Image 1 (tube, rainbow, N blue to C red):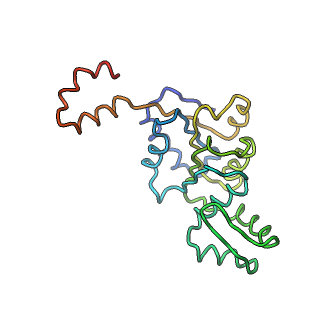
Image 2: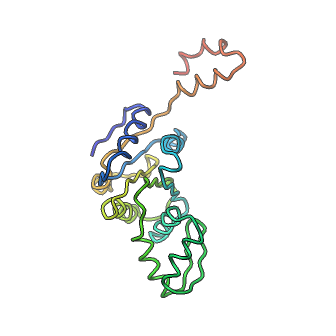
Image 3: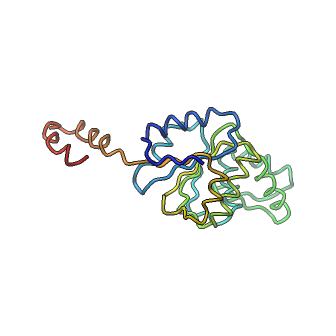
Length: 210
């Protein structure tokens, strides 16, 4: 595993562009950093909508919900989704980007379909790892399935404190690259003063800010 804590955020852009250009990397990328450093914003700017399936893990409690969330992002057209599931019989379906409510028998078959019918043409971006209540070892196992079994490119966005030392071995097996996002204080300050009506007034405090 290559851990790069000191690279600039431009390195993040360069590496993500490199990673998404690989045919079948067989590893995921972990993007971590403190609250408020702009991890999600950076990734969304680097990867446009037609390049990614963005999946928030916020509020998810089971691995099945993770698979369902990914499935709905990959197949957002409700009529097409219903057509796929109706191959297995009549059912009621409610898709709210997380939940697929099906009958017991149909549900079991559909659950298998949801896990196996995977579109690997775009990068899967899992966000809000720290806001998910699923056991991390189980979650990493599900993520690894997309990487190893389906040949997907996967980026996981996480807060530093969520990833404890106990999962180091598991992380190293899944994440081939770990990149820490650092606050771009100088860039943010320069952008702020550029929009100010009196930018010269801020020049004197630049050295204090950074």
